[in-house]
Image 1 (cartoon, one colour):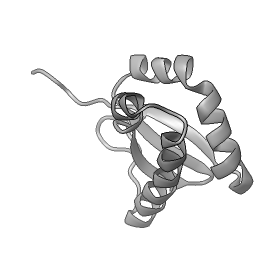
Image 2 (cartoon, rainbow, N blue to C red):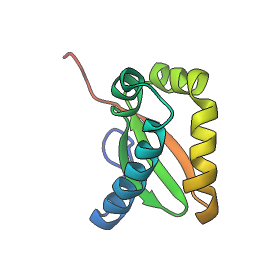
Image 3 (cartoon, rainbow, N blue to C red):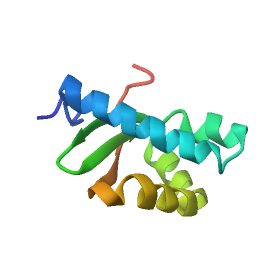
Image 4 (cartoon, rainbow, N blue to C red):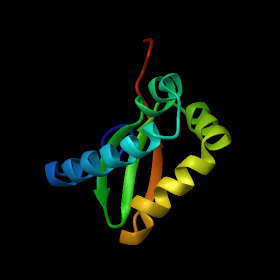
Length: 102
């Protein structure tokens, strides 16, 4: 099920499980990245839900996602090996469709 912007809609349980898993991932990333990198690039990532083996994370734009991919692939891959792969969970990013100006 999706909302008017095409984003998936998750149950409270799916949202709660995503938040818990993402918190573990963020804690792990905090051991590898500077406070500035965490503040600018990790904290804005919003966990949306955990369903069917996918941890859905929302970022503000495709450009934000590309920056993550270009600068933090090593850290995300290691995090995935520890926290996601053992449970057959994959990270899926969606882009925010929020209107900034009308």
